[in-house]
Image 1 (cartoon, rainbow, N blue to C red):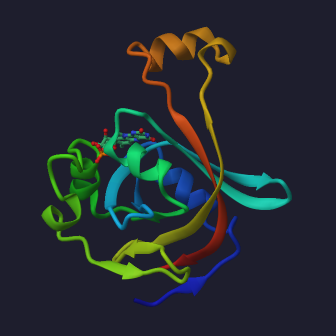
Image 2: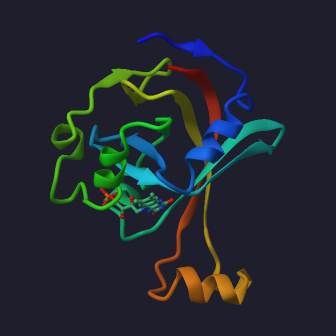
Length: 169
Ligand SMILES: Cc1cc2nc3c(=O)[nH]c(=O)nc-3n(C[C@H](O)[C@H](O)[C@H](O)COP(=O)(O)O)c2cc1C
């Protein structure tokens, strides 16, 4: 795969265009070597602690959550105008029951960072190292958002990833 490195902010418009639908792939391998892919629709990209940071939100009910809790790094893989059926599949099936990487025929390639994997065939990539995690706190959140997005109290954990590499595929 061809990889053209970019500044972390250069793909921002494309990232935001992919969100919230059809989304992007979050791929994680935990410290025990378990891998999973899930579709994300929400993310932020910016500067925190004077560093480029990409934040993703994962609900505790996701299989991915257990892996993220035991992971040091993750990748965000953004297809632009393609792989939409696979995004829908990875956003509706759980890695608890299905090996989505195999079922979707996703080809994983080693990232530029040790311990990070990426999905072949995407257009934009971020390799991230988890530097902070925090729960969305019901009491601190706009009540309308609580009602709309958390009827089941399934409050996301926000994972902040230092962007180590960003490139176009
Ligand atoms: C377009 C789209 C965006 C999604 N965004 C998120 C998200 O940002 N955070 C989240 O926790 N779940 C999100 N989901 C739901 C998960 O992808 C879905 O529950 C998935 O089956 C979880 O897989 P897992 O159990 O293997 O982790 C999204 C689903 C779709 C279709």
